[in-house]
Amino acid sequence: MIIVSLLGIQGSGKGTLGPLIAAEFRLYHLSIGELLRSVCKPPIQGAGEYINEIIRHGKLVPGELVDTLSLPASTAVNIHNYRILREIVPSHIAFPVLQKKILELEAQGAYNGVLLDGFPRQLDHYEEARELCFGPNFPTLVIYIDCPVEIARTRYLSRARDGDSIAVFDKRLAQFREHTPSLLQRFAEENILIRTMNDGSMTVMEAFEALVVCLKTNNKMPL
Image (cartoon, rainbow, N blue to C red):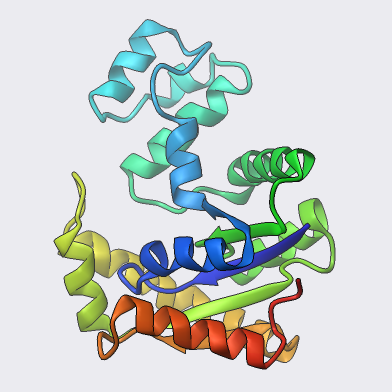
């Protein structure tokens, strides 16, 4: 099964262009953020009513309570805590969840592959994913959506959920700027990187069609 990574800053248009790309090439659109949110959505089996009530109220679950849980409940609660703190979920927690989902999709056989939205975000995560989960051919292709920061910030705030703010955007942007350049350089060196622009000068469909033409013209989508 091929795995295509879709990367870009918050508000770059991944959530809009992703489903269109997935439908065009019969890929399963898998957002790592949505996947992790689904895992820690209450009620979490095995966590007990008290911990589930803490999660329902959007509060941190104390570490001493997490330590009392067995797998997979402890994984789900830890993901919840990292999300509340707006921190990147560590690879040793996120990878098993991601690998399990991709194996399920592969077993179903209904798709050509997976469009992995928002992963990997760091070079060490990429290297660990290849070594521990997906092998040396991960990912098959990387699509990076360029977008000016001010436009991305405006889009992000226009669809903000509870807890989203300019401060949260700027924190994620700082993390992105710290980790992404070296990651994109590696992808470019491996000749698996496609860059596209979504700066608001085109409609969503125009931006999508331009990307599809680029992928098909250069035979970049390995289907």
